[in-house]
Length: 503
Image (cartoon, rainbow, N blue to C red; front, side, top):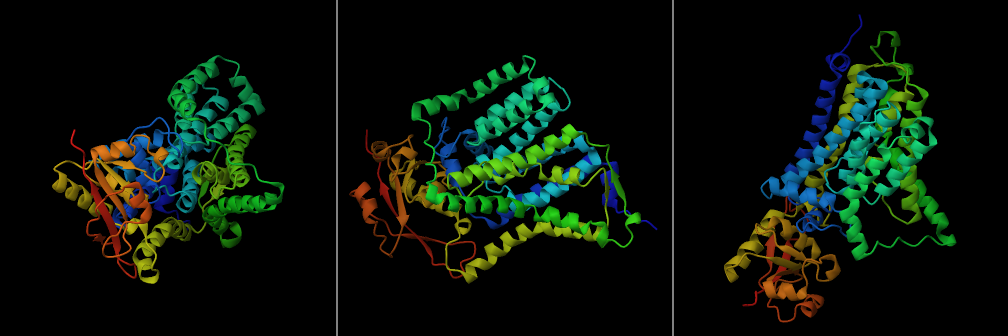
């Protein structure tokens, strides 16, 4: 008797419902992880909120859109980091939805769900997206751009040009890799007959005008502040090292596909005793142009991103792994053929669930066990809320004014910048050009807090801090707890108040 699980029946009869179950499971998983385990945001999220608070037209870290949206999400959540975590998972869901629509247009709804299931196994290892930033925001924009590129070139829908122009303009406001990604799209249009046919109307011209209008604010900022200089090209003697870096970067992307490859191997007919009893997922034949489209965008961003990063000596794939591997699940599905048998259903379901949950389990184990095995500081274990409240309340109690600015150690200033109730400006006193919204004169006039890592119980300021802020009187250093204290040394923060000047 043939056994077909409820999940397979849902996949056949209600592919859209199956998609939403998978997408919301992923989003809920990676929303709960930081909310339960992180007392400070991971990576550069605090720095993102520092710049987002000022709403610049450009930043040293790239175009400004992700910084604006991060601050908006933070404010809408009541000045809570929860809003930023929700925004990151919203990006994941939108990306998966756009990829589902793209896959459904090419391989049908049933196999589109299989493509998304394979994509999620790639996502959890290469780009779970907890750390919101330009790379995370670029993923849904890139997926939407590919969807409308297909509707224009593959389906001949001229009305998709407007959506494509909006997405391209927003991508230019999001990622420094946008120019390369858009160039790859243009190359595909020019290299294919259907693509060249789409260029015969006036729609591309109107799209170009929309893109230019959206990118104009950041372009003006670049003209005023200067286009960031590209890193120097490697010398001939360094080419072998860069070649090894290229192999490492591209190999890392291939390694991220291991989960999807494992599921494909386990579903092989050689491992099934009765392959004729396996349920079948059918799709209409995929034409040659669709295969060219999928395989081109599965390979070109990964190759270009790895090559550019290796050329300039970066240890991260240019544009991010999420963009490079966006259509990998769809590429696997097309390569599997028109007929896909789902063999050993219960076992495959268990393996898929284990692959999806494994990274979250690893993060949990790291947060709870690492403090007992290593003495190094874990940034996400630092209580940002406690630090922000302490310095904000003490400053207001001493000066009868809200805390307006904070300077000193960047690790602490960026945390205080978003966690303090007054949202003070962050002054990067060691590199003032990074904080053009405030300078030393304004900081001294408005007053603020200077913080540093205290090396002793007296809270003696480091020599460089005393040089930049002469005359400060250090307070008794404050010790803050962590999520799990373990073997870590107490986090001791030295601080001093710069009182505001009377006008």
